[in-house]
Amino acid sequence: MCKKKLLQGIVVDIIKTDEYRVDEEGNKWFKCIFIVELTRFSKRVREEIPIELRNTRVEVIRWCSYDWHFRKGVRITLTEEETDRVLRSLKL
Image (tube, rainbow, N blue to C red; front, side):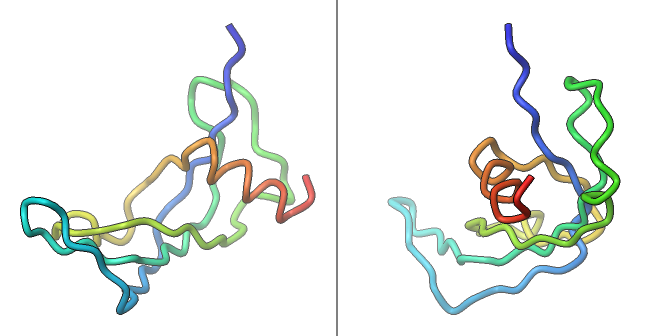
């Protein structure tokens, strides 16, 4: 089984935009830009992140509704699509 490399990082800032959607339960979901400082690949990969990627800050777009979605200083794992987009944009 091939293990997909997923990037992990720390959320250093969150920019809440004015764009939002309302779901079927009436919750407002705001489009947010997360500023993430890359730290490593996910633990499953067992490979070190390239030195030129470490501490690089990237923007990730996520939809947020609840208080706990807006926490800074937490570790997040980027999705496959987010990881691919970041690696392509950094030409790696």
